[in-house]
Image (cartoon, rainbow, N blue to C red):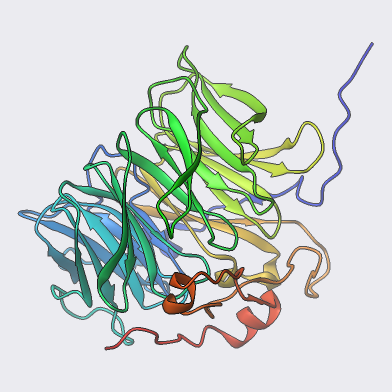
Length: 403
């Protein structure tokens, strides 16, 4: 008789406990778009959700403390001329958010310090360069004002947001579906509609490596791991959902079948704890696995299960979590009926003291490089700060872009 040994991990008993409805956000006109996007972005100050809008694109921005029923006439960010497809908060300034749209533009917005009291229709920066819709925006992890965008014109464009200009435009054989910078931002990986993943030098535009990962025709998502490997989610030829780990030369380390559902799985990676959370579009579950350097490399930890499928989902950066409650992740789950449910993920501990083994130093909001330093060839990992002091002192809200 054989048995499979259970791997010991302090994160094995992580559990999700949704907050009460009055502590969540309700009555939101969530977009009905069918694109593969999370439709939601969150940081330690704000929650942003892409909404339905007549005659253009819009997204809602709420201060985190403004929970409960949201007014139907709540102010929106409304400057796009067509539907918004992707949004992402700047990692170095919690008041700055970028959006990509079907109107072929990328816009960068500043949310007023006091919050939203009227519609915002004038962007801080308007980035025009794509010829078709823009479905992907990703900020650089450590360099200030560097933004990546991907469009249906098969191009990825790198922008210097501070100058409002393109640094590099890179053409791909097919539409880029997801992108991820490596830990120090010296290269990025892109998954495309042609089922291939490519690793790119962002300063020259050279494709350093390309290869097939998942065999299925549906969307593949890619995340760069801290150790330089790649983590992907996708589909097999038979339509089974999978996740896999790949070396930087795109040789396969491992691949694992999950189930036969058809929703795209979005991976959310925490480099501090080496945990990846898998959130499938239309799923009612969030799976979490721990990445290690030894076989089998990906260790299933647990699964949060609920009765309602997720229309979209947002993930709070580590510096926005409640360390006093041993919270190691927090999700903002969009329901099709207009509810944004808040789901903290915690590790049960009896002590009320700060658990430093759960909270290694994490990426703060201080950029390691200026845009000019990065463009000139310098690389640097994110500036790390103590999780305890970040949460205790609060975010100072660095203002990087001009008002």
